[in-house]
Length: 294
Length: 344
Image (cartoon, rainbow over all chains, first blue to last red; front, side, top):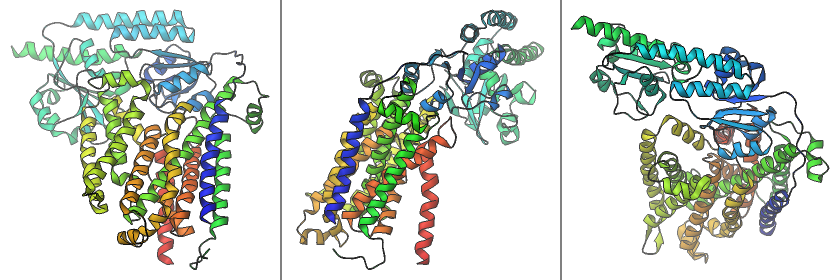
């Protein structure tokens, strides 16, 4: 009996070793010819750009960070862009995987390229210039160069308008991100939140924080920002009644706050001017208060 | 051969049944996935008559390594669980108890979070292998540490090992928490996915990396069956029956540490297999380790491959983390088992 059990055990070990060998010596065949371009977009902001360029018909799948515009939710979702499944992406038979430098795992991307998928990894956008470059790049990928150029030009105009409106000392803005149902994170250095503030010439009221960190209620009170921006991933996620310390700040009491969608404010996509204008409006109010006060 | 008086399944047929199940689940694993491959395609690729590069790649470079790695990892996790449950004479023991998971997690998050700073040299040196190798060293190293602490005057105290494991788990957990605090949003997401385990990225080089350790653990474990049976009667009995008590402890810890360390390194954290599978096997086949160890290996591999099939199909084209799937299947199953036992 003992012998049989041990034998079965060893047989399993050995057969798997043999299977490993057999499979590693397998050969590869001929590539297949393709006609229409099919795109899987694994990044919310890139997906948004594809839609803005009117190339959504080329999309055959998106990742879980893609949720704008609403129609995108009808497409198959291949999972999270940092854990892309090889077979899942390949099953959609894409010609192009459009994604950012954040995409992982590297091995899956390599294998997709080997399987004949053109893997386009664009740098993560953290400034208006990045956004413009990225729109042109997406335009090239989806074959809408002219439209992308026109869109970039109009965005540049609106961005420039916001930039020229800046004057005086930079306002100190508290940038928060609603996390889950109860928590709030402070956006510090190296975050898209800070990048948005910089793009409109504002300063981060929490400059000592790096990355996103859980908010300390006392530190919120002590920060005394000129204005407050809160991003949430779904409407109504941020509840001011749970944050009396925020409500007690002058900036909140006097209405210099803006609560908006995270994809809009942090995506650095085609809606960037809208995001910049929203924050810039707060700054204008700050200046008015400052000029009234002195 | 003594027949089992408690009405348990006869061992020979039961082992054959598990082997049949292993084979069946392997077939399902090879034929199911997000990418459409018919049985004809698969046979075509295997025989060499189908000249489709992508189909070949999906089958040969994705599904097969995934199957092999899944089976080996599942088998090692289950066998390690069986060894440790035998060693501690406690059905609640699992590889996590002596710090494997906590140590591997700490090492993994260190690579993820500190890879850009002072661990950068290591990451440059080891490339894509930085994380798996670190997890292996972290997992096995922690076990070794717990064992060194529990060792006094040439004897290993099982009770001290357990307590040392708990303390080390707490310390490693604190280290993980601290690094989590300093991690960026992206690093945090990477870590979260790592701790839920995945076989989705398994390639042949992963198999080649981990298989020597995994196979070593699987092949060495059956030699501990008799001494572990003696352990069930009490630690003194082991010596009286002519086995070397301390050698048995050391071998069991070493096998579990290296095996699970290698498993965690390539597949992330996968819970439940090590705890549940030996239980199931003891319930159906009795507590003798000569059967429990090989049967756990087969059943563990089968269960993990089965869970992996579900993980890649239920939300296709996306994939669920395998650790999550395992807990989803294993949890209720285990509860059912508990309830049935109480009635009997």
